[in-house]
Length: 199
Picture 1 (cartoon, rainbow, N blue to C red):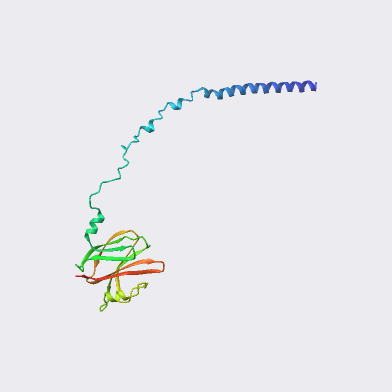
Picture 2 (cartoon, helix red, strand yellow):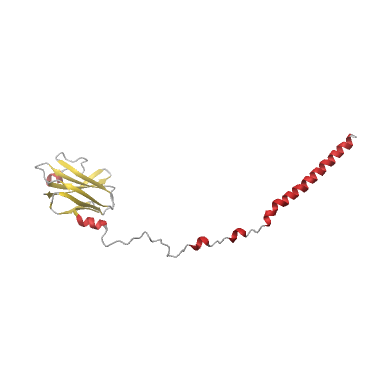
């Protein structure tokens, strides 16, 4: 009897498993059904739409290029500058200005035509009474501090290849200009110029 029941249970299990496989097969066929839809349908959207933007030079790629006049702001300021200081290769500096300037605000231009140094400096100064250009020129070219009889009222530091413009209200009296360059050991004064009479 027990053997019969065991065989009956085994038969029932086999039938259930077979039924499950059949049902699973039906489910699997249902899941495969979406694959019969045309795979080309997403391609029905026009793929050329992004190409509708013209790729020819008609696109405004050059809109940033704005025509400029013959004179730029730099040339205008250069023309208005009362003093032009120029650093040239070979540790040279020159000053172009009138020997007499009126009291008040003046533009000045610092041009660096050299690339050999990290920093270029220009100092505007007055000297105590009794001191002259000769005293300034005799002062140590590598001194890190100005002489006690010198009063610096304006200093500018610029980089290689630069072209800079500034303005200054120059004081009445005699103004002297000194040019410096940076070196591996410190600073080197390469020019003392003056006096420029401010009246």
